[in-house]
Length: 454
Image: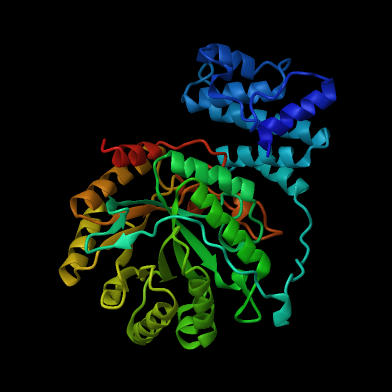
């Protein structure tokens, strides 16, 4: 897959009959494409209307990444304007997908930019109902046997995971593909994009991905598997294996608690998934349900359900540890799970107190399964520093690991519901360690420092 830069380059060759080869197989322009130019030179190139627009974009992106300025002018605004120019050029040249990518870059850079929003809305396809690719005829939804990847299972002791008898601290990230998060996952997902994103995650030193499986995507007609969704999931498992990432599978996503605890159809779905992947060593653990909080009679029903579902899983799968992420009620799950998962928002002092309370009530290993800070609410420096502090707390309290939310920012075109797109700017879009155009945020410094021992 060429990507935006590669596609632009090829189109230029077609338009102007240029014969210059692509810079590399992936079509990605190396960081040294403008090796040692200073900001002034790059700004001049980036604002020169006679220079081809892609070179102008690259020049201004370089200044922006350096946090430089162009004669005191806001580089973000200059880059935004150039994205619009580039998008218009590619739109007029008939390259709709590349134009959309430029407009999305512009919106990611300046979410309030109305020009990019309008351009994107003009290019958005009309919404049509997607026909079901499955029916309730069991003959049409039978899946081929699953062939697991080759590798060693992780094991769990009183302190955390082991791989090949060596400690395996979880350096994790919660993950949806940047362009197909939430309900779009496994429906509109581009496997080439997943491969690219898994590469970024692994190269950063992260070793674990929390993957979210939506019940209504994976199953049709209650508990019959959706072949296309499972085929997509299994390709993603293989992509994780290719870069040595292990997976925590979060099940029953999108199901409200009362339905989950009372309707046996969801237990059947869990049975199917855990049985199908019982021999998959790339899977680290099952997180069988995530919810912010449970209390009262709903918590009582949940504990009964949890005891039953753990026994059901154990009948088919004795290899994978089990956990749940139940917000403030997570401590009540300790007698029933193999390790306790908890999530945190708020101050690091509150994080210390939460850990102290859990450690006082259980000897199970503890995983901080979600912690993150949105750059919609705080700047990149604050996001980085908050993660630094949280990791210090995790290390000093002997947690088995942590998982940051999320890996990538989600463009507003990916989190909106048509026809109300690209949607309003909101915090959920900007929790990523990378933005939606794969520029790394400062928070990656915290990740690298923690994994490499500072």
